[in-house]
Length: 193
Image 1: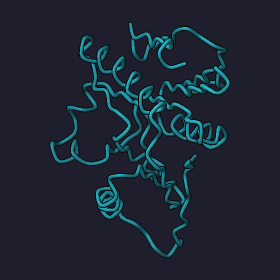
Image 2: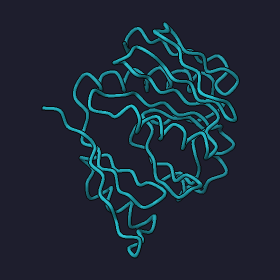
Image 3: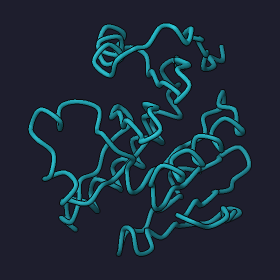
Image 4: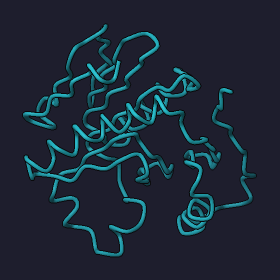
């Protein structure tokens, strides 16, 4: 059975505060929830085993590099970011510089992070709409994400989003470079394809 994301429209007269949205997320921890800048609530069911395995491999490589590099903090898909446009998003993998992390209070570190990640990864699952993920990547880019990767297994391609540039498409790459945002990071796609 294929499960797809469902959008729930919240009337403009009903405004969820960040705290209320966080409570909804906590009360429904079996689901990944996101909120668009216009207030639409996106309900994403848990992934299947294949996507979960691949997401873990991405997070593992990113976390291993971040631990060795020690210039920033890496996050998995359960981390929420409140973007400057007001949306709440949870990329499959993310990273921010240590200075950004250390500038947060302990209380802020335990909530959705109040900015866009400097680096974000999205892995397209079989049920994901490519167009919806592309819009999400553009949203990250427009809100301050300096480097983003949309990994599309179905088409064996990666869309690379850079601040102030048009997206670049790579067909069937073996690795991806973290460029100047994540110097020295290289994501091997062998276990992702």
